[in-house]
Amino acid sequence: MLLLIALLLLFMIPIALLALENTKLRAGYLWFLALGSALAVWVLVIFSRVQLPIQIVLMRWQPDSLFMFTPTLLLDEISWTYAAVLAVYPLVILLTDIIQVENIDSQAWAATLGIAGLSLLAVLAENPLTLMLAWTMMDLAEMVMLLQRVSHSQQRERVIITFSVRQMGVFFLLTAAMVAQVRGEYLTFKNIPADISGILLLAVGLRLGVLPPHQPFFQEPPLRRGLGTMVRLASVASSLTLLARLAVVGVPLTWQPYLLVVAVLAALYSSFAWIQAKDELDGRPFWILGMATFSLIAAVRNMPAASIAWGIALLSVGGVLFLASYRSRFISMIAIFGLLGISALPYTPLWPGGSLYRQLNVGFLAAFVVSHALMLVGYLQHSRRRNPENENIEPWMKILYPLGLILLILNHWGISWMSVALLPDALLRSNLWWIGFVVVGIVGLIALLASRGISLQQPIFSTFRSVLSLEWMYRFFWWLYRTLARGFGIISQIFEGEGGILWAILILILLVSIMQQSGGTS
Image (cartoon, rainbow, N blue to C red; front, side, top):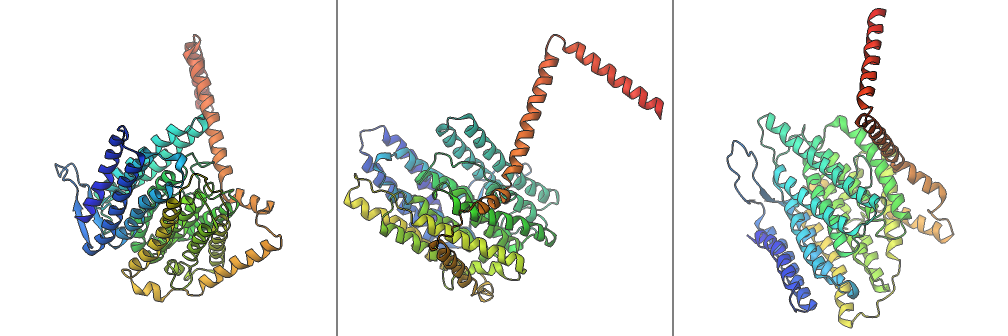
């Protein structure tokens, strides 16, 4: 019941905000309405933990012979963890958005709440049908918002390509459901067959950009701080939830060596790109790709605790940087404190994620540890960047603004330990406690080298990044596609002209002659 009230608020309050926008009501009142609703949603989702597990049928689709699935929500340990992390975002965004007084927009607040509602539906999906509906609605919403904000044809083209790639993930999700149905099985995320997990992994990998490693945009589109962060992380959270469910069953052993190689490439590429990004917003796609890679490989190796730890670190700690539009010394200290949450030191939120490194050979272990350390170096580098203070900021805004960032970090620590308590203790006992110290040691070494003028921004690292990105391969295929399209266009024009029939007759005669000669020769 608490969960349904939270979802109702996330879908009804945006409608109310849009309706009240056309009245003479001041923007401050709309902000208080949105803030109160966001706070209520977060509290309701947190307290819904007492109802675990619970299954909610949203509607009953008839007839049963035609619709094997019906939209259903599942609130269990895994989905509650990601729902609790997502539920705090509208509240944090509304608290941090007030610092940008020149960009106050009630439509953006309404969109933030609506996207949060769709993301919760995806995270709580109990079966493929519910997840497909939520994924498609989120993709359509993002595509519409982006197409309204981009003007160049190349940017619009990238938006459509991104939508198409994500819909390929939906296609693989549908394929998994159909394979199970052919066998007479009813696929739900509570009980995923081991031989179907590989298909679901492809669906998740495509949506996260990990399988194969790719970036949907060459340049981050103009959805920036608040709403942009909500849109980016909403789709990611739903994929990470499915990853955690896949981690319970793992994937076929024959897949693991190949997936490890792909994961190493993605982790190294994203970590170098994250460091070399000019700011945290341009580096946001690489942060998502890098941290999601660790969560994916933990799922591949049948480690749900590690997959969840990496997933909620991606969502929580990254959000501190992406929402910090104004940076003072105090704000930078808050961001740096978030660094502790991804260090994998004992008793920190990412400590369960250290079990990812268990039983890896030396090569893979070294590559993942270095990538992990580089992600921390990039985070430290971006967190120390200063932004000028807005002169129009009022004193009360300076109090609420850092409160939102602190709330995001505290939510990360609290949810991490509550979720870990619900997962098998064996995964914690087998943790490699020393991994965090090694990672922090590498970060300290890189910081020492940087203080002596040795930087990771050298040409050799840029070359290494460009090779690992595989962008050169994607550009080649894109050039080949355009060349073939132009060739077919020329052929089409020739045949549609006045001499098209003559050309067709000539080609037919040539084909007949070739066939006769081949027959005579044989």
